[in-house]
Image (cartoon, rainbow, N blue to C red; front, side, top):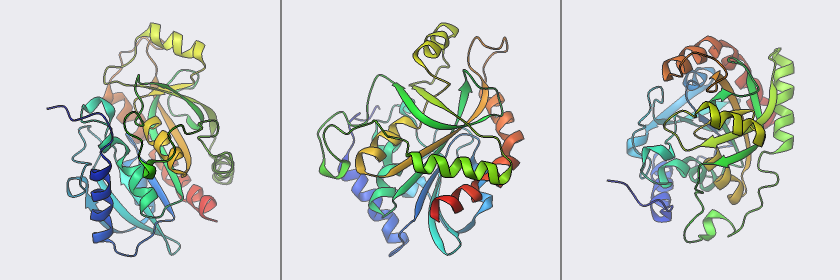
Length: 278
């Protein structure tokens, strides 16, 4: 059964209670959301404990292969980090509440920064490239803030001019230089999925200014920005978008590309976290 699309604020409050009950008095300095293929990045950190998503009210089990579905409490140089290993998606048909739960939990457990990651189809970039998201285009034909306005979600009409924090983007770029990892910058376009885009859509998206396309990240960024979190995001280009390559698009290709670049991401992420937290 499809769930109501509007955010259920009472469910999100219970999610925060679940996390606080497990980890009382823990305040994360940073919240990291690991998207498709990014899961092994968690191995770069000292994991103290984990909570399966099924034990956090409102999130539930991830329906996508490659998303392990748990919230881990990590430690980096005596600072606490929340790492969401996998995410829920709008196309799963369960409404916005599970999709934006990480943003809400991050904010109301005390984090100030949220770092989002994803796998994306390359429009102007090639498989294996890493792209810092400078801005986004919401082509999901919906918005998580539709519905009753709740004070805990921010203002009714949040400004989106500076959704992806410039200082944090600069710190990530510096981390790339320090680890000799090439980082690009570009616009992420989010479609609803779950079908991949058509070649005609990709041509249109390129005209609109999209550099990469995916099915996530934008909802979390919208809510995070609205609540006052400092948001930053990185895309790993896992495949060419439709029509650019003659090969058919498959989720297996995404996994193969992400696996091949994983050593680079494991090397890069601790340096990113160090720069952000310093």
